[in-house]
Amino acid sequence: MRIDVISIFPDYLSALDISLIGRARQDGLLDVRVHDLREYTHDRHRTVDDTPYGGGAGMVMKPEPWAEALEAVAADSPVERPTLLVPTPSGTVFSQPLARELAEHEHLVFACGRYEGIDERVFPWAAERFDVRLVSLGDYVLNGGEVAVLAMVEAVGRLIPGVVGNPESLVEESHEDGLLEYPVYTKPSSWRGHDVPPVLLSGDHGKIAVWRRAQQLERTRQRRPDLLAEEPSA
Ligand SMILES: COc1cc(COC(=O)c2cn[nH]c2)cc(-c2cccnc2)c1
Image (cartoon, rainbow, N blue to C red; front, side, top):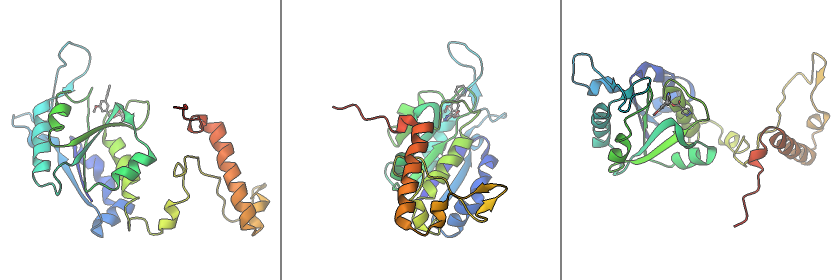
């Protein structure tokens, strides 16, 4: 998979050089390229933003640098229509199913917005060449999309075969089956007056599986009842 990230703070993405994603890049499983949006400006001050039409506080990212950066990325894309992902509070919610879908794509391009956002006209313009997805990581506002991109690249990258050493560890995990994960424990079995639930020391794998599923349901009921909400019957 090829991943391109466009940002005015490319160094923010240096976390992609280390750990799991860094190793996957060294192993040739991921081709990650980070681009400085300012390389696509032509004025002395390398301007990427301007005041908002209609007034209001803050600044808006100019469309032209984005168009030139996206054209450059599309020019040597391995596919006809790369997927353009734009982290924004006004996007559809990112999820494990979406991460699984994106892990099948050949070329992902991430646009990191800053300021109050990107000129809205960039998205219909980009839609001629890209499959444009505005994606939210949650109902809060960050100063820029970089942190969200790091999260999404990790969520998607770890699903690519070979990136995670033991693919078994990808099966039983939070949200994979729509429920929160069960509690986990390791040695010592008694720690500062807190003991590991005895069932986990029983060696009875059937009972352990039942206990774990019950824990998942209880946790999900307590912390994320929305995940259990019944789909409205059609
Ligand atoms: C592309 O346009 C953006 C992107 C971002 C960065 O992403 C997030 O904040 C985010 C992504 N999932 N959850 C939060 C922030 C704004 C923004 C909007 C209003 C005021 N201030 C900033 C606009």
